[in-house]
Image (tube, rainbow, N blue to C red; front, side, top):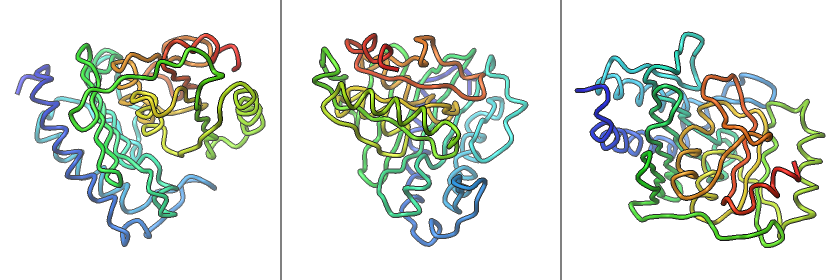
Length: 261
């Protein structure tokens, strides 16, 4: 298979993600937990999903690199084609039975995402986007909201519990935004929150120090739905950085959002 035959890769990747995503529903595996940090968990689901998807993607094309949350990615060259996977975005949610967890997969080349897939098996929603072709939820076209100001917006702010040293600043940002918008939500899964911006359920989303697998697929889905995703300074977040601050919005409110940050 041609390494750049993205249409075929996309169709097959959607099937792979949906099949592996069903593993998130296996409560026995979700209860098998180990800790990477004080508030950073990995379950048997994370490991099984990553292993399964990695194996199937390798069958599709063994030349494409693989970046996954549950492995060492120091040798990844994001200038070359690379899969970017978060096998379970929202692991803490999964542990607690808070049904907001998703599989997030992107294919990127030369630091540009070609397509993104986010699947939440609990809601049976799969969000997809291909560069230049718009965004979909369960094969139906989606678009960001038409909110023109924060005063008419519902926003989400992530707390990133693995970066608790940034908590004071994060909650100050949340308060400033809360004072300007309708209300604040906190879902605990960046990929889902980005997709909710893409389909208009949220008008904006902020979180600090996210990894590429947290936002790669969701960023493209937001952009293809008509929205904007930048870092907190208004710059394009890069896939080759260790982490990035993420600000996503429907677009019309983005300048105001950044001013609040």
